[in-house]
Image (cartoon, rainbow, N blue to C red; front, side, top):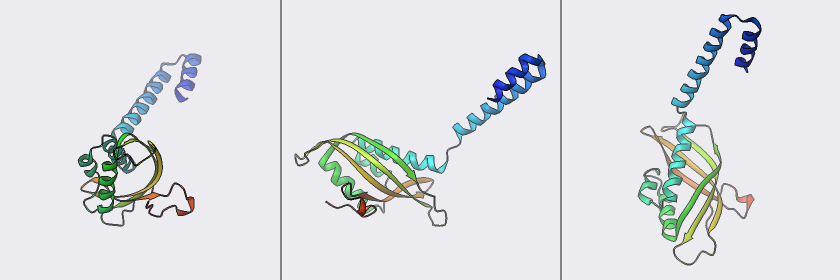
Length: 170
């Protein structure tokens, strides 16, 4: 917008000074874009951890998935083992990611995220009658040695909106 206004001023006044101002504005925009590209925020790191964990799940790679789960995340690790024993994922997508406020008062820093997971898979056991599942999740993470790791998760009951936030057990 500023470049358009300056372009109009340049055409109407034919002053070379306006061209230098236009180049200065362009340089500032370029620097801003470069900084945006190079600086990674905490929220981007958290989203990156979740995206990488989803990619490991989609690849059905339990060992790689465990690199995104804290060693203390016993329930999440057990659930991952159980699910990957039952199904082979063909697609895993995260929708509506909401990253809460990072709590820097705890040691290590923690954060709670909420999102919907859209899962497509093939049943390995012959006991699951469908190949598509959508589930709400609350995933808690902490920062350990500069990396965000999953410490716990809650599967939200997709059939009962009253139970939001309670652990969903079949």
